[in-house]
Length: 323
Image (cartoon, rainbow, N blue to C red):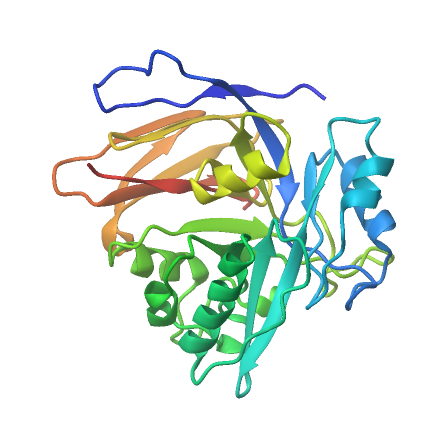
């Protein structure tokens, strides 16, 4: 595997930082299941699927179950290009509303917490995850229409949520008057909150494939990190040093208080449209081709980017916030 390299830019002085580290892109999935909850395959078989399909890391997130990645990491130790990160889908509810929060980098099972509202339930589980020195990520907000934009905007100490989930019944695109997950993202960002969107498989089915099944390979993140380690990957996620994708690959992302600049990896004869999006979901600019750049103007709180390929696949670039 050849890793693409990119540089992180510091704009505090308008110039590149003198000691800018060289970083690598690592492709991974943050949400998947095994027979330890409601998946159809063993942890070993699930890990092998991702490794054989050229992912560099995977988080096993079974419902209310901690799958220790240590034994499998020892098994894969001869190949330094694949890593299992500790995870759990902390699975709770409020009345008939599911509240599922992934935990990354934990060391034991985190029991679910229950609150007196959807927001209180989310917050209690986020707090439990933070207490365990792990990182929370809110799963599929539109699943059973459980989480509102207001809920997401008011959760404290959580920077990650799923802007795309590979299961079709999670309603990524909204409907019936309910916002899409991308619209929800802009609603939250427009309140001044710093939130980053991840794309995931939420895979359960590895033995049979079909459009109505929750199969792997539908959504992932590419993380820009100093090394392939749990600490480096999780830290990069919390800092927004990644993009989310359903098929579009990027070669470089430069994100700072000045704005965004990206280069897209050309594949076959696909064409690409990049939309730069700001407060309120307003399209600030549109670009075509393999390179796109947007400089934040005075008064613009943030800019993020969505890249759409001519076959309908997407990439979501994390927001840059104005100084």
